[in-house]
Amino acid sequence: MNLSPSQIFRPGEHQYDGERTGLNRAVESRPACVIAAAGEQDVAAAVRMAVAQGRPVGVMATGHSPSVPADGAVLINTVRMDGVQVNPRTGSAWVEAGTRWRQVVERAAPHGLAPLNGSSPNVGAVGYTTGGGAGLLGRRFGFAADHVRRLRVVTADGRLREVGPGSDPDLFWAVRGGKDNFGVVVGMEIDLFPVSRLYGGGLYFPADATGDVLHAYAEWTRSLPEHMASSVLLAQNPDLPAVPAPLRGRFVTHVRIAFSDAEGAAELVRPLRDIGPTLMDTVRDMPYAEVGTIHHEPTDAPYVAYDRNVLLRELGTDAVDTLLAHAGPDAQPPFITELRHFGGAYAHPPEIPNCVGGRDATFSLFTGATAAPGSRESRDRFLTGMRPWSTGGTNINFAGVEDTDPAIVRTAYRPGDYTRLTEIKAVHDPGNVFRINFNIPPKGMTARPRP
Image (cartoon, rainbow, N blue to C red; front, side, top):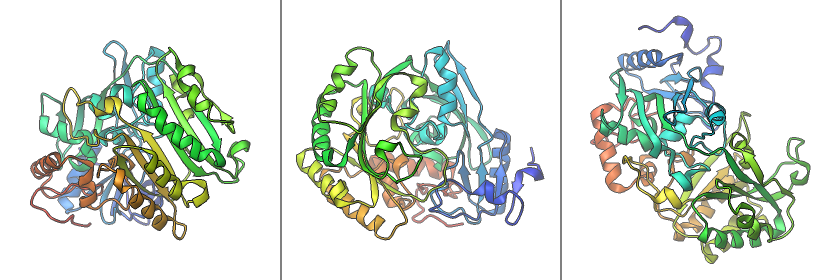
């Protein structure tokens, strides 16, 4: 199958800029061309074209830009591939490459089912899942990648492969956690779970309560059931009309919770409410379809962000005090900080093994810097200060454009798993065609070729 000329956008042509530009403007890409893929055969044709021309392949699905510049590459835009099929009888869903989580949530909810989606329904389902996927049901059920039944993948030879535990098991192991290093995932079948409601929302505390909140939160998380997911965001809110009036222009400590059990929810949250007055309290019983209101993250407005994260093995008093010194309101941090509670089912090995790392973490610590002078330097001093409590690992889904060096990427995996990934890469992509990403070079290749 050949691509139609109307699906290929080159520099200077109408729609080229719209097709190549993602939401995060921290990286500017000038690909040789952008392919508007409408189906899996288009993806296969685009990969074959790239290989024939000696070009690397990048993928853009739902708006997130490539993590490295796609200059000179063939960039495949899969946003038009957004089909979802829910099978309530088997408790599963088939999801195409450009699908956002909100589409899966909406299709599954009428059947009393839920996917292991991310905190933002606007995030692409496939990229999130192949990166591991730590969402609001993860402490109960595990990483999203742990619950993939099968994949359809276009590999560097331009072949469309059915990948599962019984066919291409090495590739199945690698893609679930290794993201787009091994091919373009054009579709996946995932488990759905019988969760129809949540007790969830946000407790928004003022700046002067931040220390009390963080110390109380760290203690509260020590004895939680696996059905409880939670996180804390520290951020200076802009003084804009889109921000709710009680939060506008203020430093806010936002505790987010999602309890997927009907019993004892209010009592379990009581210690947090007892910390003191809140600016807002949106915690309530809700249908799962409203899960996106819990984190209440931005939608599709363009931005410039420099994200980084570390995984923490513990969060004791000294760690909280260090966090407050760098990211609390008195520090006036020019970045945002999120603590996300791990543990629970995240720590359990999946029924069908995959390469997802970080199962030894108790928390993830995410930071988002801006282009403002000093923002990234201040963020890096903070992360260095938290190093005594780090596992030494990172979460690839929370990594940013400064974390694409393979030496950093490898910290997302156990050492033996990373070695195996390089070996599988050497089998399926020896020329490192798929390198416009958080790259895992094939074994024997010490540096990532640039386009």
